[in-house]
Amino acid sequence: MDETVAEFIKRTILKIPMTEMMTILKAWDFLPENQLQTVNFRQRKESLVQDLVLLCESKRASLRDAALLDIIYTQFHQHQKVWDVFQMSKEPGEDVDLFDMERFKSSFEKILRRALKNVTVSFRDAEENAVWIRIAWGTQYRKPNQYKPVYVVYYSQTPYAFTSFCHLKSNTPLLSQALTVASNHHKIVKMDLRSRYLDSLKAIVFKQYNQKFETHNSTMPLQETLELDMHMDSRIIHENRIEKERVQRVTQETFGDYPQPRLEFAQYKLETKFKSDFHGGILAERKEPLRCLIKFSSPHLLEALKSLAPAGIADAPLSPLLTCIPNKGMNYFKIRDK
Image (cartoon, rainbow, N blue to C red; front, top):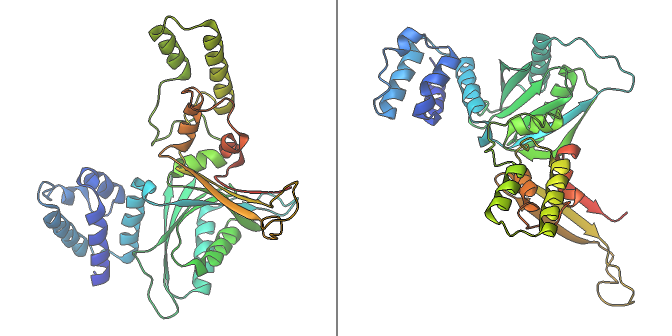
């Protein structure tokens, strides 16, 4: 086994939490279970990693094997990446082709290798007809950097692909071209949507809001909250009860009863020209628009917005600029004068 491959495997295993070690190694399916049973998983992690690397050396692990282990680790820790969404489209009236995953993989890799000599491309099939792609970029004179790859998750027969941050921005057009051609689409655009939570991004673009999300901490339903408040304060007046019922109804109509997709922020860029009934002044003569950037952030932004009105912090309904995020599939907005 090559020294660079051994070091790559060593670094990857060191990242794996001890509580997940056996689960990830079994998912990797490279080391037989009878060999894993001979390893002492209760020893210090450094010693454990050394034993596992020796087993990989005895089986002559390749770079492809090491890359597959890295993909599996990333699948378990998707939230460590920031994911962008790309939307593809076909020509008007273009027929829908029968999709072949193996043909997609072959075409995708050929396009990258045709344009770039030093590149490592690895694939792993996942649930829901998805494929995970790992790309380690090199240059014309340097070997691929295995420690700064870009990951792509593509769901077959859909126009959407999800990509992690690409350290080499100059390769983004090549990646977009490979996705478009291999999936038999004509055009690709980057959506104004980003999050660390891949399942939530998928739910937004596929309109699957009524599912449960892995990272969601369920809260008390609005109806239970209302009944609890009424029980705690028996002196509540009639008008206040009616207002609470209205806020509950409007909130449920706006957000629904299901858990919200998990986003960490929403960003609004405002550009507007200064307007005044009074003539003259520095701002009135300014030709450039006034610019303002507003960013809302929270560990779970949509759930936080959903709770504002019931908590009495904001009036119901909230501004459409805040509530339209899932429907528009955006958390980056540019607001300009009409």
